[in-house]
Length: 336
Ligand code: PBG
Ligand code: ZN
Image (spheres, rainbow, N blue to C red):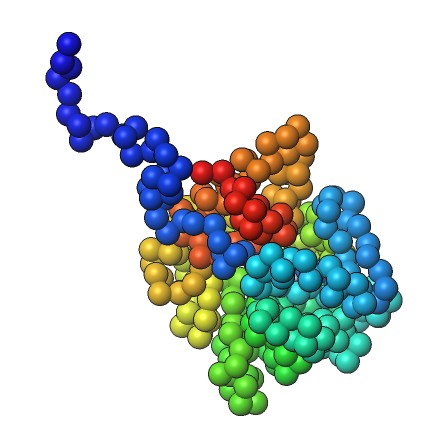
């Protein structure tokens, strides 16, 4: 029997072998370059503190950091994203300890440079872990963010991280025009050529940050962040935010959270193909996937999701799963 067939409409001949399947997924490989690992650094120097809502994720004290990272670096880790978690350090209205000499990130940066000379060090820049009120800027008398004071403070903290040895500063505060303020301060201090600004450009007000706020002890003490993070239904503001941050000099862009915002990711990549684009698979996504993986199958679920992020336009995925993924990559255990 000869079917009346059109060979052009037959797909199976392209995907019967794992290497051929790889060939059908161009530019979405999962390599160590595509993963950035977020790390929480506590001011208890000897501590390794588990985080209840994030199994397998810890807050590390300075003396625990080297041992924690060395095996991951060994497996190909390229970049980390540092979050300071002050516990004994006092909080105040201007977040003084975000850039004081006692700040755990400021103290860790020179050490990390020395221990891991090839590792790229990014620092989250925000005030919420360091302020009494837990909001991401300086509040004015009305209880709302004071725009001018907040961006100046965010810029000064960025400079402090740059001077302490960061390669990338990543402002997550979402105050308008902070990228411009950061670039101005870096320029004024003649350090602008040695530090990249990764803007959390499209950051939505999300319920998926819940576990992070436990981890970083950075929950707002009153109210919410809806007046400075983007409304989840808005793609218009996300696009304006990315355009604005590019105009102000951002080196790299980000969409956050990840999986629920892949449409935004694709729009931003199409609109700004010349800018490296990051996606943040946030704490709530991590917790959900850990639950989903309890019955087995984490690897295939996660691989599928990570590929979807690459396919939608992510150049780099910020993920708490980075150590796990790097070991799968190294051992040739990724699903194809
Ligand atoms: C703080 C900050 C948050 C995250 C990164 N930086 C939380 C927030 O904005 O409330 C979220 C990260 C995560 O959930 O994994 N500005
Ligand atoms: Zn914040």
